[in-house]
Image (tube, rainbow, N blue to C red; front, side):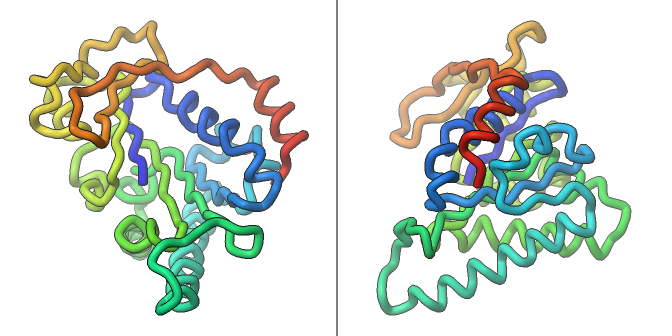
Length: 227
């Protein structure tokens, strides 16, 4: 499960489209399904809608999509119980990527308290139980505070784009990240896509940059590799 955090204009969209373009072939072949949630009214993900198996752009449909993902995940877990401890993607049992843009709109800013509660519960369940059965959460947000995302600690991989201060960098990448060289708060506004990530093997933070993805590339890929 991956959490991408960055200020407005820091390049979160480049990481989103980098993921989708990288998965285009398995999406088209049916080995991967992407269920997209875009709480910006579809402004981001609708451009490549053909790559998505399911799509929601309002609060009600978004929380239903998340809850149905939980139901599908738990059904698959029952199917695999006693047979294997690790899911392998197949056309009749694809890996499901739950892609959420502007996650905080669901977990913190939603005014309907019932939808807010249900969204946070579904995300926590997916993030805590999904990996072994092939359900992966990839989510983006601007504000990394715990109050904004109660399930922040359940994301096993975090990417820090440009952030506002050292405290936010520590929230995203861990207390020792700044001392180890992760300087998300020093990334310049004219460098969208620049980020720091923590390698899983314990090495120091690495500075990376997501590639620019144009609207033309998105449209072309979506038409040629439709889900």
